[in-house]
Amino acid sequence: MADLFIGIETGGTKVVAGIARVGSGQPEVVAPPIVVPTTAEPGRMLDGLFERISATPGFAEVAAAGIGSFGPVDLERGSILPTPKPGWSGFPLLAEVRRRLDVPIVLDTDVNAAGLAEWRWGAARGASVAVYLTVGTGIGGGLLVDGVPVHGLLHPEMGHIEVARHPADAFEGACGAHGGCLEGLTAGPAIRARWGESGESLPDDHPAWEMVVWYLGRGLAQIALTVSPEVIVLGGGVMTRSLHGRVGESLAAALGGYVPTPPVTAPRFGSRAGLMGAFALAGMAASR
Image 1 (cartoon, rainbow, N blue to C red):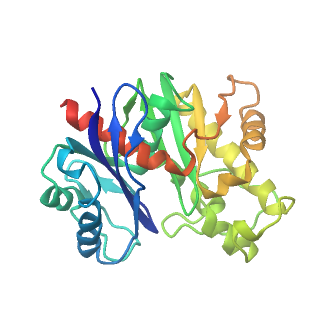
Image 2: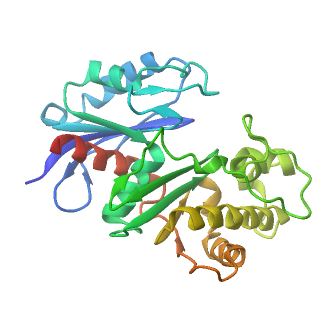
Image 3: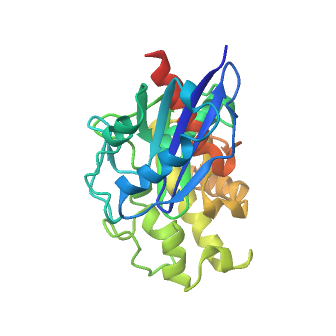
């Protein structure tokens, strides 16, 4: 028998929410998801979001909810940690959703959620150790071991690992916290800061992509050597250039044959992976 779950994905520019019927297979969304901008007044934003989603068919029968949130997030307290996103630092996201929705809820990072969706129904299905990395406005990484998202002291922040510099690169980096970390050298803002245009505007043969591929290969090599994933799923706006094959080759070169190269693949759910993962988190909430 299938249950109705709410999934919520909070991102840097938008928040997506939907209701899905979830049984033994992948979620079946019952109505078009609701999308609202991520504003500097998260409380008012949630008011508007729930006003709309409460009118969705099946809302009254919802059994649980899952939230996949941008980070860093204090998963124990359910609140957003210091962030450059105006109005969100310290926001008690889990408590505010609970105030509007009286069902069991699980909160995790958006990338752990996306990784969970890909592990259950998608490109990482059944892997004992799987990594999901999104490369877009920022870089975030989720790690799953036997289908369980890894937390620890906080949660993985793979986008902020330090990487060796490309021999031809003098760019300082665009990360406000670490300068030239993987995110600061490879994510969307770094592409714009380095080349003066967004990645969407650059042609496929632009030298920016050789630099992106080089850095992603070195960053993934550190991840592969540390957690030994059976598969690495790469999502996010930057990866819509279909760079997966080139990144896999760059990863193999960086590993130098010392260990096997894990496959690098696109997410089955594409840009919907975070929302699908939020439904998977709701399933975890319902089973507790």
